[in-house]
Image (cartoon, rainbow, N blue to C red; front, side, top):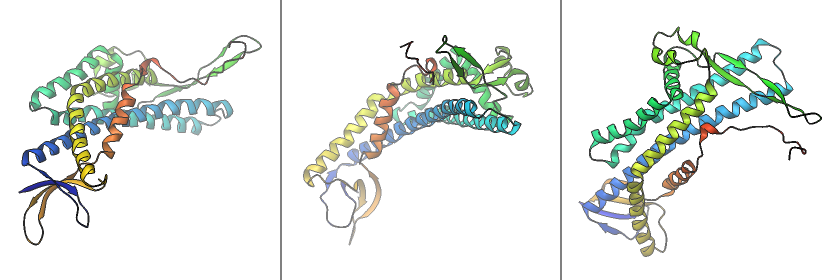
Length: 307
């Protein structure tokens, strides 16, 4: 078997010869980078669904200012849209939670030990946050029994003093305890710690904040190996640039059976890093996230007097 790095395209291209060990090391590095991207993009999917929920609440409030509900169908449409946002968020959090361990496994030989480690991160947040427990139970309810948003509320209040007094309008979404109790599979322990109504937006923020903390721990767990995997790719890319006038488009690591008139490719994988650049960009974004549960977006006006 022959192992090498070369551009996989028509024409004659220079090669960098590899040992079998070099090839397998590169292959393992690619698996690690791919796994790291997997958990990163699933966290980003969840984050984007959370942002869409926040945006929907703001859009709903803005629409009410200029077009108050005059028909039941308007309120129904608004409620259905917000339920869709919640379903999307809960589904994406489930994807993240269920697949986190799978994406961490390639970094460790002891699969049982790493599974135990990752599980401990989730258990810690579950035990420490009633919002986490509620959202997990609500996700199961949405998947198997009913919808999450039972009531909408549109509170408003006057803020400031004359002549700069302004009206603040908001949209709030609630799950009702009495309706969740009808689901026989809804966790009784969670129900027992619920108020009669739960503000889903508050719980969603807290839940995403919990998952953010878990995600940063997971990134720390695999961070050094991910960096080493990327550096290995960069090393070979740099070497090939040096022997091929800087051209690396279509660069692959190959294992081939030598034969006539041409060698037979047995295994191949790209060793370019455009796709991994996305992971790096997203990781930097996620590391810079503040305490999501403590932040909210406001359209409140600041009058010249209060400035």
